[in-house]
Length: 232
Image (cartoon, rainbow, N blue to C red):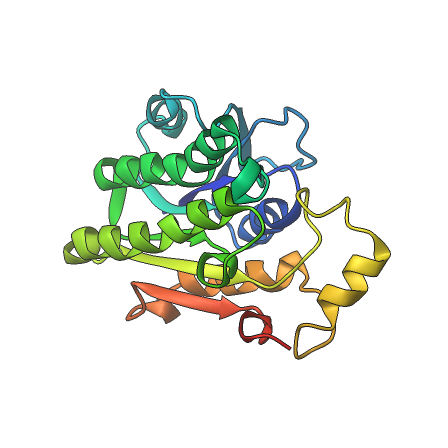
């Protein structure tokens, strides 16, 4: 039986790398993105053009499944909005939490009814969930994913559904494409490897978490920051 995976943020960065790698492994992949232009041309890929904050997200995805059992959810999409706490706008706070955390909750809620026993959920967090950031809205939304992972893994573990969070190292994605070369160099030096992470490197770990080789791995936070979580 072909495994069906939902991947958010499929048009660029980690989401694109994850879709590509899963298609190579023989998955049927349903990609979700607010960008209608996704550079994936594969017979086993379908795109849902939608906004993740849509309250009908679960119905939209359920319809796209067309009765098939869901094996995996990989939540890569996210936004980074807002300023420091002194001038943080309520609208930026609300949109950050709805996009990064609210959508993850809805996809987990969908998984509770549509996911096959033995399925997999991977949420993409961030080291700022633990270290904090200049954008409290982003850090708080990512910290919430930790609590969601722990709670959903407890609830769905009896069905052997594994739920984990991955903390990627700094990498070039849609959210970081405006970084200056000076910033890239500085952040690269904060990792033990003195370089940025490649999206496919994270996708490879996601593949492991979706495989049978991770059969006793749930409620885990997988640190892929190459030491940058702990400072340089």
